Structure formats: structure tokens, C-alpha cells
Length: 111
Image (cartoon, rainbow, N blue to C red; front, side, top):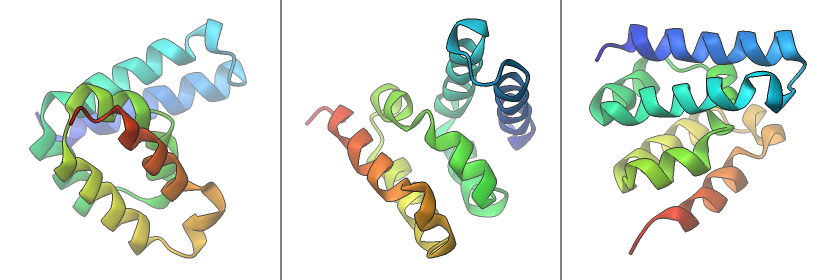
């Protein structure tokens, strides 16, 4: 899978949230699920996207699905990629509580 599929799923999620004003019953949950599924399909492509293409804005949107993505992928490497990206965007990203969201998502890892 290429980063184009990730970008398309991310943009679709952003658009649905904007159009529906964040109302989950109006399609936001389905769009987020599609984004998470796209990110989880090919973790190597996802990690490359995070490393080379992911902006702070993208990261904030993706963080909405941290719990589901960690649960689905069970990937410690992906968590580390998110941690690196969060650090790269510090301190401006701190206002979005990304560290806390990722730490919370880690509880979905099966030991």
C-alpha cells in the first residue's frame, strides 16, 4: 500500500468531520474506522508515512484513532514511530495532548 491510500483515508476522515460538525452518527465513526483500517493494513507504509509525510495537523487527526489502531496492530514499533513524531512536533504539539492520547492507547497492547 502506498502513502496515497493513507492520505486519501485521512482526507476523507477530515472532510466527514468538518461536514458533520463531528457528529459520530453522521459518518465520523465509519470514516475513522476506515482510516484506522488503512493505517493498520501495511504498518511499514504507515511508518514511512509518519516519518516522511505526516504533519502535525495529520498527526492530530490520526490521534483520534490511536486506541483502535494500537488495538488492531499490536505494534510496539508503530507506537515508537508515533512517539518520535510527537517529539518532533514538541512543544507546539503539546497543546493537543498527543503524548497522553498515545499513552492511553498503549493499554490496548496485549502482553
